[in-house]
Length: 453
Image (cartoon, rainbow, N blue to C red; front, top):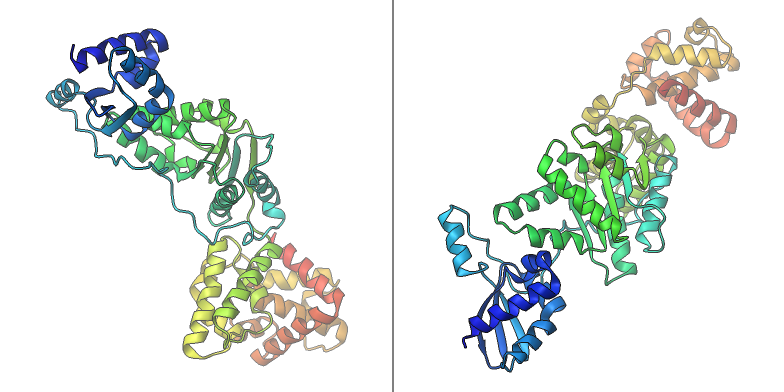
């Protein structure tokens, strides 16, 4: 009796014992190479299949060999085409050979995590409060009543930061957890590779064996039917096993064009949390948190009061651009040995300020300020120096300086042909009053909000 014949009888018994489907998935792809020194050596298509068989059917196979008269004490699996016969048929049909796979400990094929993106470094405000709270709950690894967690928002609002923060926190709280974070593009690429090398079994099992699956930018699979099909089944399998799924996208599930309706429906099963565009307070908080690091990195650089507030006012659409602006300012100041003041800020960041320039005109500012203080527009443009007119005029000049990219001379001309030094004095005066006069501070903030609305 040959080793192959004994293995054939064992396979017949296994098929009856575990069922046709399981047999075809796990046992049929194996081929017995040899038996020596108490070890049965097998070839398996992938490392994953070999490990799965050893873990789930190893003892049954070993016992079956013993019943056949072989003193087999262990099994060994190496990666190779499933059988010589199958490989020959596949090559004859023009199928590519399987890619080389290492036989060492298999790692999850995820994206690297950015060490900067933790919960500690995430600045929380009203626009991202719900998304942060939900992400924190998932990251702590306790009982979660929502699955999946779907995070969405525009570019630079913190989706990826929260995804990385969840992964870091899960690894900290549950070191044994299998946490897989990757982009939707990577998911699609690996699925295509699995199809190409006829290795979908290991792909399916790998993605279905994780404790937490995190897929970033899911809108990328829009219009890609095969990838959507596999994503749909992977999603369902994990949810059925009570495994946590976290998804992010640039818009709400129902607004992603090219995604199947059944996937949209399932993405809305759990909690959908959006990250709104940042408000002034949140942008200011982000800049203040980044300012500390910049001052440590550039201890010789001085920054004037008001620059941070100016940036928070003017750059509102993208946190990445906001942080990049601060980095550029400190780098420039360090290289040229200058203090960061308003003039240098506008000089250094001219391109960013133009790109993010608000649709606010000086005429609108004058009109709003006049209405707020119950004055006529002509009063603000006149030469009258009464305090009841001079102070609102200074507030209007301050808003013109911080909400538009107009030069000081241009602003002065709009206010009845005044000199640029008058504008400078007005801006400085309002900056000082904001610190000591709560009414002025409140007026300026209210007017700013009205103009930005």
